[in-house]
Image (cartoon, rainbow, N blue to C red; front, side, top):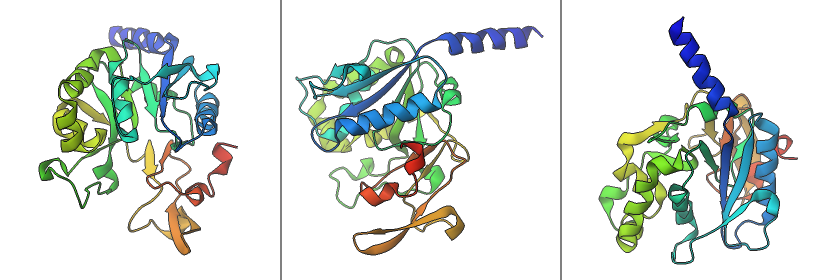
Length: 253
């Protein structure tokens, strides 16, 4: 009974604590409409109190999203900017989404999976996804297990990740070619994975899933079968093309 009481108190504390939702918008690849789309999906699928932030270089982004300026002292490619998430001084649960993620169902339970001094993300090997690159300078860094389309952290408790990155930015950028590899090869021991059976699936799979679990679309003139698993919470888009979202419109329109 005592354990149930303690568990109940911890659960109430989590439910009452405001959640930080964060995304990144850098450059011209995505417009402000993508940020709004993500915000609307969070609002639709989160019953907990939350504040929505956007790490961005866009000075005209709507105040609704509480823009956080990207560090002007860093000169990074777009896929590195989410590293700044680990510099935030917050001691509260923080959930990051890439702006191309599609939220299909309620995300409240994901907040409870976030732990202090741990990094919650996707273990892409569980979904049979190979993220190795054909061309990379450091071969030992070419086998990442994680996909950082979603990240759950208490930022202040993992500030050391950011500090270690900026200690030698040039080396880390050249060696790891992205946050996925940087985390995979330096912080694997503090990573927790989302559940592939419930939490997420990848839209693009090779080979594709059975036809009854697919949408058939055309990409660059060729028919493609894209995964569709409506009972799962998050759909991960790994290749940007407007037709990747065909059949998913109900979630963001």
